[in-house]
Length: 482
Image 1 (cartoon, rainbow, N blue to C red):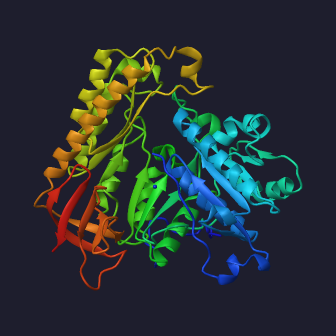
Image 2: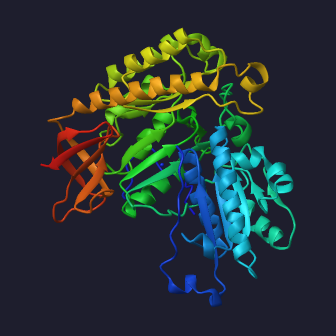
Image 3: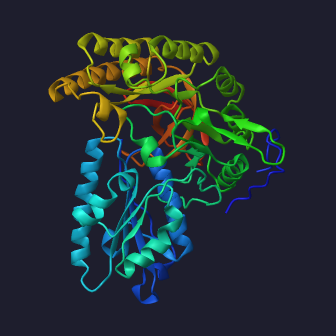
């Protein structure tokens, strides 16, 4: 639990993750894997955004408090959970495939009661279908119902339906200390707010995660301080729209906005790097940009989803900004933080998009100078405004061809941008061994670029080093410690 002490002075320094799958470690205690000790194990996979991965750590903590131990081995798990994403149809198909695999695990575990549960956005959207029609799961929990998980496990154990997908206007899990599972001990997520009020026409998040609510600022500072004291050296502040963060101190009535919160976290310690995701172009302010500029430990990297470069398509998407507004924000970022890097989310083939409008997306990519992007073709999501109002009228082959245009351009831009770093020296936080060689370290710059370099004695994960860049690939900088 974290101390939500409202007497902390926020202006003074304190004394001291396209989808993928996460597998969690077993306890170091040998008794935790001894079935005769009566230890129950849980296994969890996460798909989708970083918020889902952060939520899985909250779920793990809740289960740990009632005696469950995490395991990497699904074959010994008593409780199998999958934390889901509904933002694209492909993600839902992947989840269904995994659920069928988990049900085969159940069949192999004859004589043992194994429960399977679905968490997250897909749980809220497809609760009845998953549980009653397809009979793939024993319990279903929405993103605001994780505190009920022990109770639902008990119900499902007795053969009852375990379901809670109710959305909340207050839940932020501010008092729960996440279990940092499968962590490198260097970087961690901190959730600062939940939900979204933006109602983009293509997006299910407001329906699956509810309205925006911001977490107690002092609990965030306490979590960041705890992480630093345990050896972590980088935190990423998470929210569907971090720029909307607003929390009122109940004692002083002082309003803490996102720029204030960034400063508070930066002041935890100069050696604690701070990142954040995701920003919304309509909300990111010059105050936030000047705060980033003010503190060396706030990374000069901003993820600023554009979705489309055409104003008509942006209006259909209900993004509440147009092309020129977005480009003005990009110019402000480069004016205030000249060495900042920007990444984006891009959707191709949205309803009624023309070839000329597709070209507008390619041109805004060039003008914005993205160092990387998350790129997708449009996938209609049931229940959204776009699904109700606009025909999904772009042929799949056209969507895919336009997506390939975007991917090809981004690869070219990323490589070109990386080439400008040759000969430069960057402060790099060592995150661990390179994937390809245990004789090399990997780490990231403050601009969020991955760097690979040869090891030197007396260095370890969590240390900062100066690395000179000698060569590059499209995705990686290659250098040497100086």
